[in-house]
Every structure is written in structure tokens, then in C-alpha cells.
Length: 304
Image (cartoon, rainbow, N blue to C red; front, side):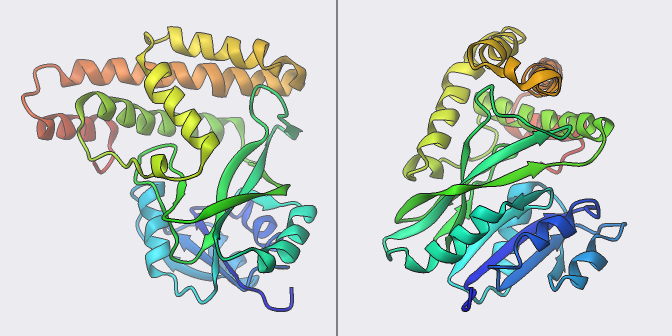
């Protein structure tokens, strides 16, 4: 790509296991690579800088706030911006597609959707409604923002239209199962906050995705908030697992697939429901939303 015209922003905290793989998959098309690090204690920063990335540091609150901080503070010099996670990488066919197609897009196209593959314990999870997950990951500079949510945040275009490229990027975390469980325990607390917020209107809701052309994301959000979250606790994760594993053929993903669909599609969802039950008990008797927020902050340790 003779005139590289894309900047990539990656959020990190102790990602020495993944960051080199991620950055190397970007070098063929990225002019700038910025790492927004929340004070890693391993070799993440050393590895990233050794590969030419520029590192900025900022204290962590949540993903949405950290990424928006990156958009606001990284000195972006290119016409396009890309979001990547440290445990993701771009496959070769998508690298080439970005090189060839991005410069040719019409000015009315302000965003590019990419298709995500998820790997778990070394296996591509093809079934259970997990592929393709179409996400807006590339956009014209200044033409998009990230939703301000505690979980399930998306990049949303301010105007214009998006196209979808054919190649894939891969989400393949190499950490242990213990790490996976700890991560989802933290995710469950954040998702509980979103569910409780939907009920009590504790915070302003970011509804910007409703005005975008992100069809798949809008459908999933509608189903989650208007249908799934309205079902009884523990019934909803049971129905969701049956849908994913049997109706959407998740059983075809083998033993690794069973572990993934069960843990991420059932166990995790049950954990969210358990935390919702716990939160509701803690919120009994609260006389204002401010009091509810303070109680939730104390319960979760999150900076609400």
C-alpha cells in the first residue's frame, strides 16, 4: 500500500501474549498504530514500541471511555481510523482487501464493516450464530464515535453509509481458562449495570446506534433489550443456550464448541442473572437513583 492512509487504535493492559501478532497483521496497510495502555506491568509497551507503535497511557474506567479517550487524544493524521483489540489479528486476504479497496471507496461511504471469526481453545467456532459477526471497524476520521455503554459498545457512524468487506479478522485469545472465567465475571458485572440501568434509568442511554445503518447490531440490541431482558431470570439463558447449541447447530463445533457455547452462552448468562438478583436485593429501599448508583458502585467496585 504505497500511500498508507489508516490509523489503528488498540487498547491494552498486559497483552504481551497477543500484541506482536496483532501489530504484525496491521503493518502492511497501517500508517499509524496507537496503543492506549492502562499501565501494563508486563512487556506490552516494550513489544509495541519495538514494532513501531506509539504508546499513550490513560487510567481505565471502561472500554467505551478508554477508546473515546484514544480517539480524542491520539494525533491521527490519516483519512481512516480502525479499531482493533489486542487479541485480534487480520487474516491475509483481508489485509489485501483493505489495501486494494479502501482507496477506491466513494465519498458517501464513511464506514467499513468487517467479519469476525472467533477461536476458542484453538478451534474456529463456526456455528451457534457466532459467524459471521459483522462489526463496524473502519471509518473515516471524525465520522464515528463509540457508544457510551458499560457492555456491548459499538462504533457508530455519525453520517454516511457503510460497506462490508469479504475477508475476516480473528478473535483468538491465548490466555488460560482461568483468565476466561475471570474476564467473564467482570463482564457480568458490567452487563448487570446495563440491565439495571434499563429498568431504573440510572444513566443517560446512548441510543446512537438506532440512527446508524448497523443492521445486525440493531437487531441484536433490539432482541436483547426488548425480548431477552424481559424474560424471567435463569429462564432466558436456558432458552438462549438451546437456541445456540441446538437450533443454530452449535453442536457441530465439537467439544471445544460445547465448552464455548455452554460457558459463554449459558454459564455467563446465568452469572449475569445472578448478579441482577443480587443487585435488586441491594437496591431495595433506595429512595433515589443517586442512592442506587452509590450502592451499585459499592457492590461492583466500578467507578459509576
